[in-house]
Image (cartoon, rainbow, N blue to C red; front, top):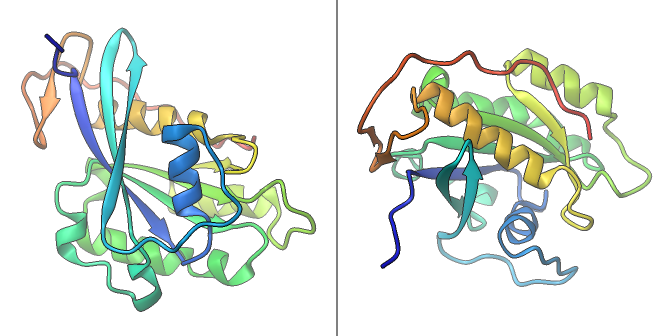
Amino acid sequence: MATEPNATFKILTIGESGVGKTCILRRFVDNKFSKTHLATIGIDFKAKTLYINNQEIKLKVWDTAGQERFRNITTQYYKGADGIVLVYDVTDELSYGKIREWMDQILSNTRQEDIGLVLLGNKCDVQPRSISAEMGIKMGEELKIRYFETSALTGQGINEAFEYLAKDIMNKKNLAIGNNYAGGVPLNKEKKKKSENGCDCC
């Protein structure tokens, strides 16, 4: 009989249309990449299990399904979120410029101190790029979230970003080895561990 994971976290991907959120999700969960794919229609999620500190952590990662094109990310979508992956395209200045607006929406629907957050500068394999790594780091510092450079094509930085996010959530949920978390409520609590600080530029 299969055992239940020690924790199940709901993760959202947020950012402008075309920045590669669906490709990031597919690379993380299936370790696959497709240069051509149909636009996501309807809200969907993929799940992947990580093992952190001898704990089985299940991540359910939700795709915004193109709704970001119409700014139709609803309060219901954010409900119960444990973590958010905020994404821009390093070759697209507009997507970088919109990050603050997305962060404002996130803060209108969640409490930053209660959820895990990471900022991804995606398509770092593509040249020329419009947004430097230093600009990504600066944005992460301004928003007080960890920055990673990622490529859905090569897989660079993606696993590291999700693993960091899972650990950040565990810290914010006061989860330690042997504790369980499901349905948005920690079943046991121990002293909160200090979160890692700084930025990762892969």
